[in-house]
Image (cartoon, rainbow, N blue to C red; front, top):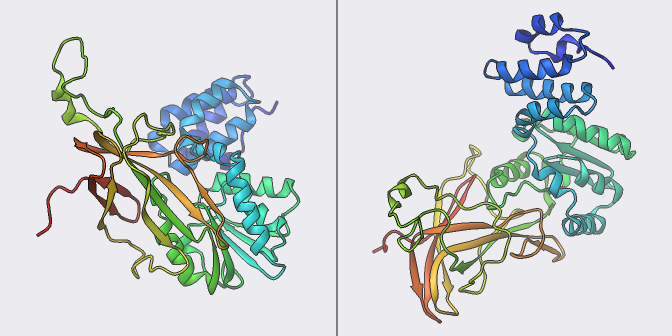
Length: 371
């Protein structure tokens, strides 16, 4: 087993230390320890590049993998490994690409990840696929996957920030189809609006197809007990500990994948965006905060505590993907908790406030009535 690394993989501050332990059987482990200790003085990209090199060098040493995990996870979240195994999601994208790609289609992808969507587009017969990935280690892994599957001549991986990609420099011409999956559990967290808006202005033909074309947020009123705070009826060994509520998190709950115990309304679409036609961004690639309102109508008595929210994609031709609560999906649903619960009766309409920005979607009860 090789017991050294080339100097270019090592951050400069670590090179003398690495030289001193070259050839030792525990070389990879010692470097992993040093990386952990010196992390504050090393850039994120240097750290993750070394972490991946140590994993390759260590022959699957669990100690090395454990110590390097925080650096790899910082740029490669675990959902990458879940999303590629979602058969329903894969099928919807694959069928849409097979239906829309022609031998003359130049395809653009934002967010290469494993390379799976780019390879679907190539397999569907695209003339060429240009796929953009900002993280170097992901771009390199995608290139390896693409090569192993025999698509290297048909797919170009561009390791850049989307906003720095230029026609004539990175792309030979504007593309006629955009495929992407830069959508988070709350729909907007991965800056889908500003990135697709930039692509429309700078990288795509005027009539380019979008896969997906519509992205939507769906929601329904639920009466689950609030997990994010302590209520007066909670059993806390007989003590009143509600003073800690000032320290609680009211951000939307993550991965609420189970169907709630008490749905109180039918689901409605709270936000729908046409990525092909709607105005997505301002000229400076920022999206201002916007507030709108929508109504949920209760169909049973209960204590309304949250809005359960999930996402839906609609493709040209009408095919759709939706992570309906209670069904297996690579995406999670989100709980948007209310500050205070509200008792509802059948037929009562609850007005909710939706706030959206370039990187967030939040649902709450209005704090005041507009006059």
